Image 1 (cartoon, rainbow, N blue to C red):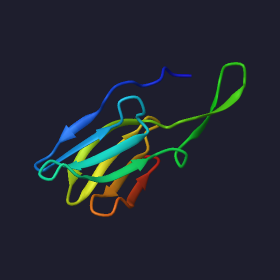
Image 2: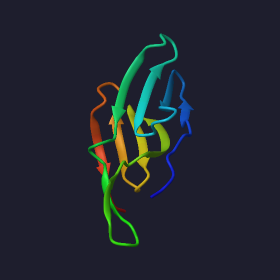
Image 3: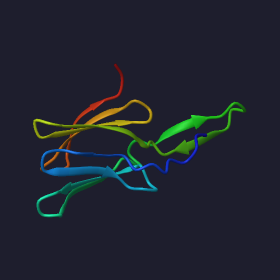
Image 4: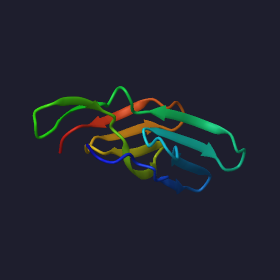
Length: 103
């Protein structure tokens, strides 16, 4: 089991701030810098939770955390999860447009 993530991941685009929650890196927030309004909030759990098996064979359900925010391009926000899942969100609607689970 990995240690709980307490890092804040964020990037600033031309007009927006994109960040994870400080003590919960399963949630991503998308803010307008001009208005200060939260445009979108999305949680990757429980949809992307996974089963972890330890060395003794005991299984547990783990939260899949946001590992990296790649950025915004052509109206899509690209995010990488800890397990390598790549997700593209529509910045207008918050809808998942692309989900890439393997290379």
